[in-house]
Amino acid sequence: MKLTRLEIRSFRNFKHLDVQLDGSAVVVGENRVGKSNLLYALRLIFDPTLPDSARQLTLADFWDGVGTPGATDKILISVEIRDFETDLDVLRVLTDFRLDTDASIVRLCYEFRPLANLMGAPTSDDDYEFICYGGESETKTFGHDVRRRIVMDLLPALRDAEGDLSNWRRSPMRPLVEAAFGSVDRADLEAIKEAIETATEELTNFAAVDELQQDLRGLFLELSGAKQDIKPSLGFGATDIDRVYRNVKLLIDDGKRTISDASLGSSNIVFLALKALELKRQIAENKRDHTLFAIEEPEAHLHP
Image (cartoon, rainbow, N blue to C red):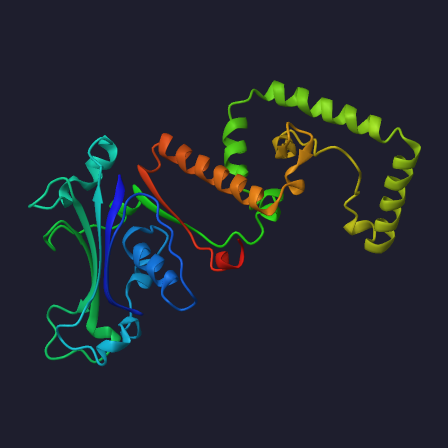
């Protein structure tokens, strides 16, 4: 499936945007032209991590040209989707939202508007509601049931891909490695643990290395005290069998160098490749049916 049309009316700095899309898209513009607002508009429809409290917009979210919103003023965001028929899982999720006039097109809409039973003109945020619906009828509402299957993932700016790749908690490699090692027999992990212990022992057989390790331990103990002593040591990796897979490092040039030696551009591409593999894995494990992957890179214009 792919987004083929995006329409935004009266939302923040958009009076009316109606753009045709075809697969991947790159949005480029100066500061304050609405790049982030465009992504947020898509999140209102697709992002499952966005709570309904955030989908409940405010009067401040109306385009400034509206002035004081009246009874007929509303914020509208809609997308059209094509090429979904060949994926039966996606078809199952979206089939109820086809257009009556063209069944090859799905339309999903978000509206922020005055309450249906409101008497008179709206005067405050409390006088508004939002609704998400598909097709050509407001009765065809949708919510998390669609967003958990057709998911938008927004990746913040890649400011430190190298650092993220090196940090186990933040690395996009983590879920992939954990999943891969989840099927490894514990006896095989024990063998890896023993190999690491042997290599570490050989490392500390060098007098200078062992002296450095002992100096480090002694100074740490002196600074921290016995109760806080974590017994630092040198080695090729942790040997806790339940954490041994964390020793896996991302290497480049056929294993000759680590990712820290890669260029910024190469690190970014590796990061995105790992993220894409994780998203594909989630589809393979039936955790979602399709991903709309967005990257917000506000400083991209600074780099050739």
